[in-house]
Image (cartoon, rainbow, N blue to C red; front, side, top):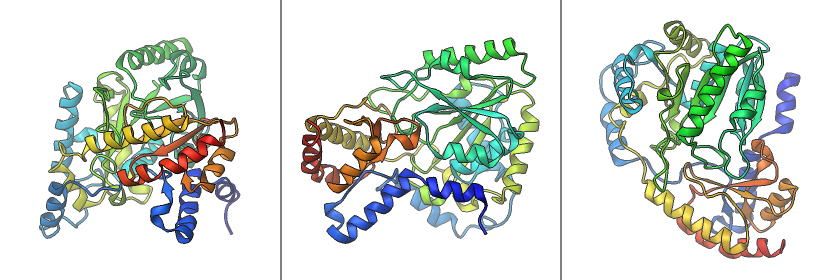
Length: 394
């Protein structure tokens, strides 16, 4: 009854969900306060009060719950065009370059559906959000994993150059990055842009390589780091964003796509995105949420609280003897597994009631991911368990 492809995907599964489900089992046995679940990037806080106020007021406004253009409400798209244009310092960005999406995941699928013919290749920078592989496969594409620079997880322009072939159609950049927390520098990104241009000319590609910038963590940066506006670096580029993390609205599935007006055949691409949004079954992004986020484009969750939690978890991991690259963005720490088998290590951690996700699940074997979007108290309570876990490997 189920396709062979889906049956295979179910068997492989998602390590994030597997560990989350293991957490449910452990909580049933030991109680919620005795399980330290760092598996899922699910913000534990509530949205800013201004967002809640907007939702309550707009819910009774006329026409907010009706169909609109597949691309979304025109006034909402105009506000986002102005917002992203000012952020990137570019001109010519209008409502016509914006398509509202059902979260970043919906936006990514609409984008890949619009771009790919069967067999087209899409580069992903490892470690990466594992669902990228499924999204690319959904539309007949072939994912090509490209390693990042060891020790920093910054993009490696030479590795990218080697990965480009005549079938390369796009590259997904996730900045700030899930799972590493790396924030890519402008210097490296500009070198990547030059690399793409050079390889396009060398291979005589008919269509330029599209940069798909996945940016749900763009507002979650620390210590002076900057999530560079990709539209100011790459001409052939679309930004895909959501409010799942910045406004703590993951369950509401609201996001958007912005196409750089300099993109080759930008108008045709925008029309294609509105079309794929419809035929993929989304029809349009949630109407109420479109209106609510348009009133809160400058709002965000308490980033200082995430910084406090990051610092607390770093202190625990350091005391327990674990190595990691200090994250500058998002809300994940990507630590080095003390043994080569990161799956076995995460299973050992689960025996201490610590839920971590193996780096293998992100194309980063030998590491583990810990999400610190949990309560501060959970991090503090996990200290003894981490110390016991660390002692097992010293």
